[in-house]
Image (cartoon, rainbow, N blue to C red; front, side):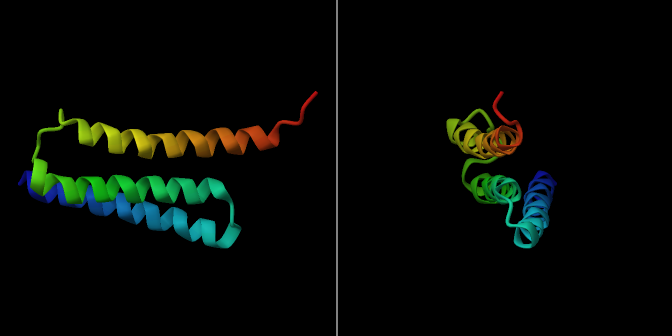
Length: 88
């Protein structure tokens, strides 16, 4: 049962990535591209690592991949807000 839930979560991450990729294609805003990449990385992480590592989420590789994924989200938010604020 856990395998089905992990696969569903991975698929939903990829669907969310496709959602943001569609917005990036229409606006060409880096914000949406970074979010799409982040969700694709998370989806691939869930689907690809579960068969080899299993439910042992204390394995460092899970956290390293999540660090990269969440760092992309932080970079997207900071770069979006940085370009909006004019310097005084």
